[in-house]
Amino acid sequence: MRSFLPAVAEQLFRDIQKAYQETSQIPDDLLIALKFVFGPCALQALDLVDQHSVTCLSSPSGRKAFQVMGGSGHLYTCFVSCHYCPCPAFAYTVLRRNEGPLCKHIMAVYLCQAMAVTQQESVSDPQMSTLLSGIAPL
Image (cartoon, rainbow, N blue to C red):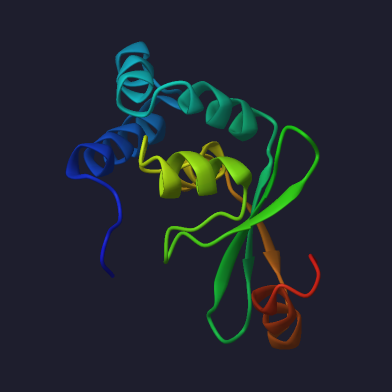
């Protein structure tokens, strides 16, 4: 699968994964690197991780989507496979102004995956189809 992140960001998430597996925490130097690479959304994403706001939905057919409960209480369905989040910040900051590679919701998904702390939920194929169609959140 093609990656949508710059190589430095991919390496940073790999380093976080390794450090977290070894110590169950993210060292200060990697937190500083996150802030340097991603700016203010890094702290916001870490807050979402701390609040256990990320859930991976998976269906029997192998489809996956991530739901992130935003700080405002809005539930965003993010698709890491195509690097998309429906939040206004993604549309404005990432797509329109090209000021960063991702929003706090997608970054929270990457962090949760690196730290292996993503909530897991199984859904049926029809439920996943409904989710992917955008008709209603699960």
